[in-house]
Amino acid sequence: MANLTVTPGSVVVDGTRTTTTIYAKLTVTGSYPGTNGDIFDPAALFPQYKSAPKLPIMVEVEGSGDWSFVYVPGATLGAGKLKVIVTSTGAEHATAGYNAGITGDTNIYVRVVAFKA
Image 1 (tube, rainbow, N blue to C red):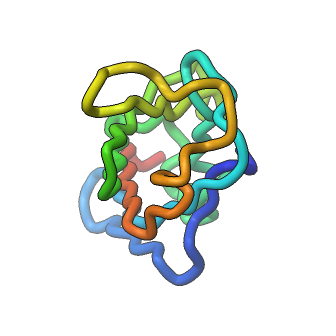
Image 2: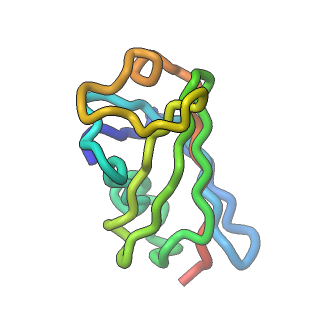
Image 3: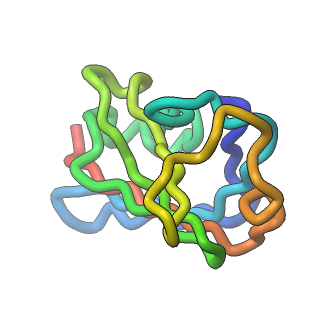
């Protein structure tokens, strides 16, 4: 989880409907743990998630490089993962330090949607 952090001041919460939607900018550091991705726990990343402590119904992550991010839901809120794929080849990121194209990407944005509690 320490590999994914939220850029301070980038979080916007929309709780005007039956869902809570959180938008934020992500920073990625460290090493990619390999098969099935890095832990992605909305409750740990966003204190604002307490209004919607259920499993997300949608997670979208976009960056500006040759990388795709795929949310893999877990059985519990803290067990979800963010899988990183090389867009041009379809291969998963190797078990190694995150590629400089990811750690240097200052335009990685996430949107998390969950039903309110």
